[in-house]
Image (cartoon, rainbow, N blue to C red; front, top):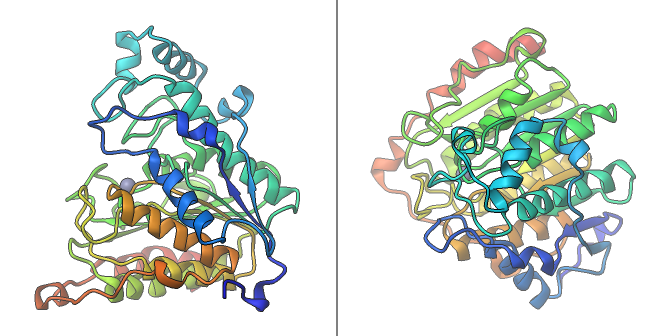
Length: 361
Ligand SMILES: [Zn+2]
């Protein structure tokens, strides 16, 4: 059975086309674009992609006028030039052509199409044509206005938040990628119409080295940027304890109109680039919580460097989001070592002290 009658009316869009399959980072690079294709293959083979309110929608490249709402013209120009083989030191200073953000064939077309996929999701939500949308080729939360960073070139997450906010929506951006969602957090650091909440590994131990609990926004945005650093070894129950303590109260107080959810899957145990130890069961729990708020959800992929674990997590995320039975896609629970049980979450009290009072909590 793949059908939950309680969710019969939810319209969910999976944003994908085979066009996405044309592009690859260099073979030695950890970011593998095939994850989106694998996610789709899993869902398609299980018959969970379409039907029962679910549909597949093709992305369209993001328009330059939209890209300029976040990125500078100079940066977009350099990115396009580099992609066409005209790369110079100015581009390098903007992070283009580094080992993290290499230049590869079709880079510009890929980045613009991947971003366009997230924006198609935002558009469907604004038009009331979808209650939920998922772009597994999205989640480039590290890119800055004039900076390629952390495998990211065009910040689709920030742009989607901008587009939704410009349409008058109060936006919650929740980011559970294991790395701090710095590009998004700093884009809205002084704004209260986009609240960002990022759960990530302690920045003292992981790229990008930001996202401390006392980074809470500034000016009108004070209290609308929330960072939850998690210690190495954080496992399911500890993670959910932190989530339950922080996210539901703040989200309820904030009352968003729409939720943007960055589902990087690199917090999973055995991810080769990070050191948290969770299973994909926490993603199901978190999505269930978001669904309980009864607001539209725009979900993106993100990090995740074990290709199979990531594709399975995203396939499961789609099932929960779209109201399908995720069956065998859930991870088995992991044994917790006594050392892991020692893990303490020192950030929670700091966040409560600094942020909760701003929201009357
Ligand atoms: Zn990441």
